[in-house]
Image (cartoon, rainbow, N blue to C red; front, side, top):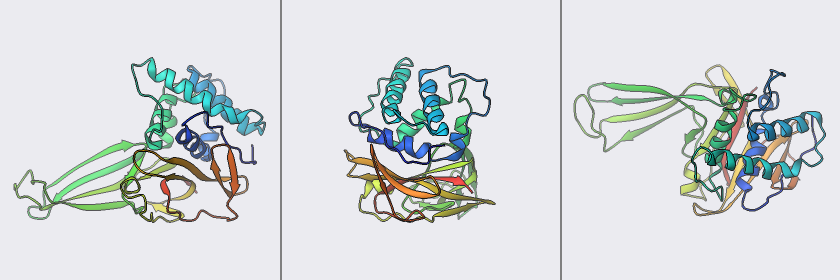
Length: 270
């Protein structure tokens, strides 16, 4: 396996792509996927991703810097065949992550990869007046939170009318993690509303009986209309590097630290 960190060339406005790709391949379970050696890719996206994983796992990374541009081209072409007219330019990194994983999931070789990331979110609306409860569980690739990483988040629905007693403002909305995969992807939505906000999160997170550890931090500098993405992630023997497109810088720390510019986290089971 390639212990030496490497970057990806930015062929024009694809920092979000390079960043998310680095975060995804920082997850050990992704590098070990798939386990069925007889499967062959059935899409260009799957073929390019297979080459990427093969180079990393073999340690032979000559030419790997140009693979990101090939992969984003294959992804755009694949989505176009399905009627999508979306142009990948300064796209939100979280949205792109969803496109990548969902398209890989359609490939014969990588079918089921989304299960590594799926997070079951329990949403519950409860009335304090009549105790009426509405709840549902949904499966998401990304867990959206405000500015604090919590396994449970509660807010008051000031304009909501209870379906049972019909009073306004008596209900609370609680979102909690109901089930998890091997990888948790966290998106701090408040970061895009207020770029200067301080994001709070632990290096490790316990969810039910499972402990997750941060393996990649996605950073974003700038506002909603533009900016730049880069990533801090674990490589080699647990060392953390900041990777900005093709540029790699050692962090000189043994564990992830908290940064003002963090907008997403990737955490893996310990």
